[in-house]
Image 1 (cartoon, rainbow, N blue to C red):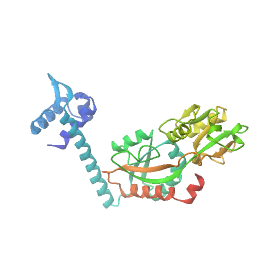
Image 2: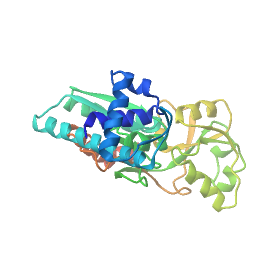
Image 3: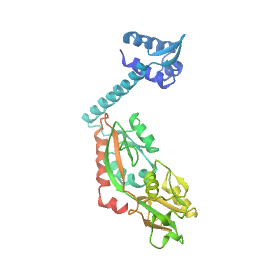
Amino acid sequence: MKLIQLRLLKTLLNNGMNVSRAAAQHYVVQSAVSRQLGLLEEELGMPLFERKGKRLVEPTPVCHALVQEIDHIEQSLANIRAVADDFRMETSGEVRIATTHTQAKYFLPDVLQEFRQRYPGVSIHLLQGSPVQLVDLLNEGKADIAICTEEIGKAAGLVSEKCYDWNHALVLPEQHPLCEGELSLQRIAQHPVLTYVFGFTGRSKIHHTFLEQDLDLDVSFAATDTDVILSYVRLGFGAGIIAKMAYSSITDNDLVLRDLSSFFPVSTTLVAWAKNKYLKQYVAELVELLLEYGDSETWYAQA
């Protein structure tokens, strides 16, 4: 059994059993793919695909099981290379950070600035997506670490650490009725609200909090990032419920900020990585920076 055979098998499966595409990705001819696949099946003593003539129809259960093991093998190879880099005191390379817009804009800049000063030879790649997509990026080995609030803390196969706690706030255009007087969920529910789409930045907690009080929340506008929400609050679409840390007293001083920490449960932003992944020294140091900064009084004051 050869590593190239296993990699060809995985590539073939990822390409919908299209032999020509798999061959092109490995810079070999189609006959070489078929031959290596045949040798692997012969060694295993069982077919890896159901066939109709020479055409591959569907993978067998053992084929799916093998590809999962191939993923582990490839991760082990990546770990071996990472260990070697650390022992060579390698301080160049790349770090791939999967995160959401909110974390990328409001939490990460100061951390990454300090990291860049320590490791100027390491390139930083930010991969943005939904929390579910971030989990997939970790599991597929396309990201080294992920930083977000939803999903990664409960996903199987990941290790996670707390960065910081945060809560929501209400942002309002001047003269909005909610700018004055005592706030309550009942008062907020009487007005159109702009907030995040489900799966982003604590939206589920907002939804469940109102639901528990038998209140219908009129979400007239939902978006994935705070900047968009703030823009439409300025246009008069309604009251915005955002992550409090995303409000800037300098750039957003045309809007009124009201704290909602007494109404909604605390949210926690986490940093996570795959359990079976070896973190290079500079990636491990970045994780430590994230934890230190998240735990600092300066960050809590901003959030």
